[in-house]
Length: 223
Image (cartoon, rainbow, N blue to C red; front, side, top):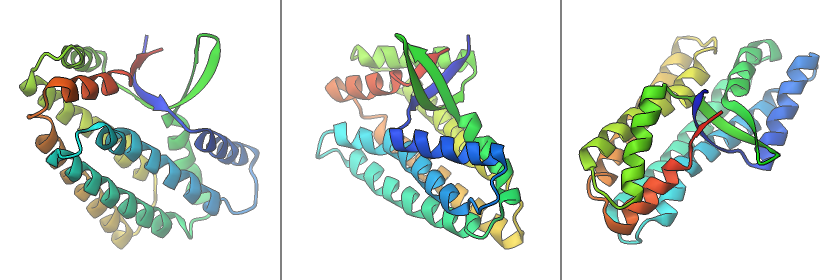
């Protein structure tokens, strides 16, 4: 049994990413960079929506941490969109091919209750999956364990950054300047994610803690 962090992909992302992957499999000669940019930007937007903005929408309106997350989400989207256009815009199909493998690795198809569903996912070590699930189950019951929740969210944040950012740019053949731009963007996202977690998690309690924990608990699946 494999342990995942996974959330459903939108129909649009599912269809466009499948089209892109099929084009590479069939060796389509037409340039794929325009479609690749569309898929990559939507892919990044859905990650940001699930990991940040949906939390903001469910948080108390006056929670300062929610405002931090909302601002951070906007920065991530604009930063990543710019990087995607800048890095992928002039690449050939041969240069983009290794990156298509990353998109394939982040797609997960599972059949649940007889229905096939498409997810965006990455594999988690079983020990951490169990540890993360345990503290989230505590929180969903309203039981506070802020130190453990903070530790798990920090570790999870690093895993997500590696899976969704570092692993995505690793296959790209970039020049010195391009690599510096990508590295600086990644460092800014990592720093902001860590700061947001430190700001939001320690003070959560009551219904907000229950909702936050139940939300993330729903993303921990096995298959």
